[in-house]
Image (tube, rainbow, N blue to C red; front, top):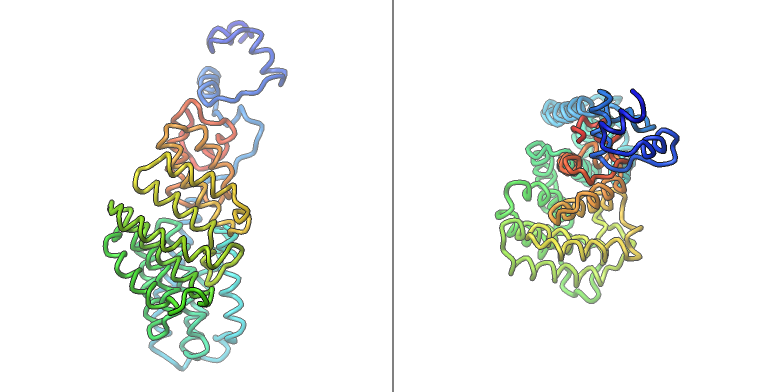
Length: 377
């Protein structure tokens, strides 16, 4: 096909085609790339000089089933005569749980999916042998499991893990509050109305009598649970309750300050600003959501949030840009988010699919769409 024929078919000048072929000009619009690919009868990804990775759908599904199997090892709870060689020391298991949390907060979901099933079994075995020494580790292991499963969209299995965390934590107000954070995440995915009173009960139970001099760790848990309650209220349209709850959370965040991660909450002024963005998004106030997004990423504390927290926020901000009919801006935010956040989080993949339906989507996002088998153009 000559340059002139090709130019006529794509609706461009011969000079434009020549510049593209020489690399003097880049292809920067999804619609143009899709048109050229159709004319040449090739995959759009071939037009980009980038390698693509295969979809992780099968790996993710297999990992979830392994976690499901690990959570079903009831025989360990029925037989306390576990051979010593099958149970790791409590300190070693506690360190492994800490590593799992770190892996999650760095948005390294493939690595966590790979190692979590064995950790679940090991910690459950350790608890059977040493209930008192392993109680906190077991609650934390169920918490990180629930967080990952919520991220993967596996709500019912996440409910099982969160419920077990709550059961093991019973009797300890701080442990219950920590476990309730994940319970709130799960309940917001279908039981939002019921979540509000449960989150408030856990929040006010752990709140120190004196907020002025209360421990920052307890304030962080209380504030995080208030955020969960506010998000749940926003989901069922209770604007008055949402405003009151998020204001309470913001007040506590100011007392805690940024740069902390008590009980794996990352709670502080920047996290509360991010929560305001999500609350506005849930209530359908797109302009307010985008304004809070700008405040969040422009704050000093933004870089102190865990990578997972930042990535989740960017995906939610991309949703806001889509609501504002700004697919190009949404696509750019997906590119800024941690790659695993888009590859493994269903809502992020949905946002990507919507972005790819727009002719204004950034071409740089095509390799990701191809790898995740999202239609281009």
